[in-house]
Length: 575
Image 1 (tube, rainbow, N blue to C red):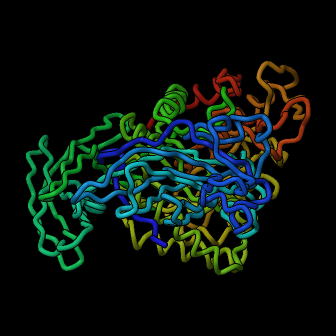
Image 2: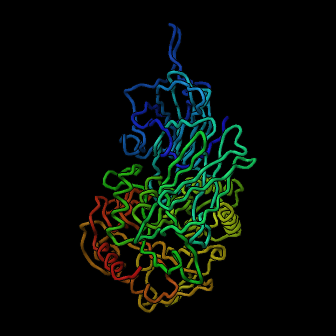
Image 3: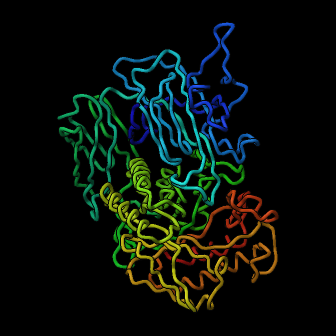
């Protein structure tokens, strides 16, 4: 079996899209994975006695990219196996290598190319690709077994507060490269420098030792030559003073990387992010993160978001609210949204889906988490909008939890030392009018994220304006979640949770803002959440109906009263 490859900046390559309708077989008991009904063989009767209890047909299809839950009513709650098949024409070409690329598949999958297993992948939110050079025919078939069953040792595990969208949820492409090609690169400002562009370029192929490469940034008049080492890697160190990227001026540069056999273009912005005491510094200046949480979902259509148009819609909603910051919860979102954030000047928090109830005592969890971190960082390390890598959300303190996430933090810093590290905790200890941040995980973080629902799940223990927050860690705090639920158009009491009224949600936000003004080390706020989103765990039959109703926008994108409260707060808050 071939291992998954890493390939930077897929959309700049020579690609053939495999998006569109795929034939499918729904397999609730995973019967097609064995030898009794081997769906991956795609056998057809050739004689009178031949008989197979499966068949791919154009009569049963699903759209790719897309989740199966929103495409067929009978699959709304489906959690098991679906087999997908796509055929395409591509003849082998001398001197060319060919890869099949998946933006994401939820959750586990096996990929068969012309009826041969070429690889498997676990994790529903990061990209992967397998090389299929040498397996091409004039007409080719791809068959993929996708399974989204929840398991105790998955990440996320058995229970999570968002819809378990199954399927091939992001772009699928065939990628052609030369024999020797530019596989990966990291080009950013050197840590805490504004006049040095540093990083590396990694080649793949035979004879990559001592290969000359050229990096050009025409607008900066940069033309930098380097030579690869014995491992096909070339290190770069370019004196240059680019205009620094910021929300007010999201400047991007055309960066051109050239090998004798390959050329890749990328749009890259240059900025610095660091912490000093309780300050978050963007390009050396203190910044307040005016944020919002976003799920990768188009609420109006009750489906997983995947396209550039989807990304534009979600991030423009955030911009209209007044945000300069978005927390991409609770998993790596698609590459389109990260690149659109680069263009719009929105800073990002990106995380892996360690969300409650994780088996931290299981050694396999750290390996899976590190793989997800590596795949997330590999894809997005050149995106200037990302300022925070997050390792977890709302995990319960324990020796095993601390040990695992500490190891994850060390791993992240070993592969990307230029960004900040965070996690969202929910263990602030509240007594009378005092909230104390006392989770020892904070020791390994650069920025502390706290999820608190005072006024909703937890009653106020004092007047909001009299609440005091304490932290012994001397680190910046982002209030990474807070809020309440309301059903759009439902009106009633502002002081009672039981009516699901817009007025009550708005009052909770007013109370939160009153409290925020008393937290001297607060450097960002991130309401939960931009828009109502689907969740199987939300059981209230009148007001929820399978939706988490904490959105500032409704499931139709309509503004609730709480939206206007946060919009005013962000308008009045300096950056």
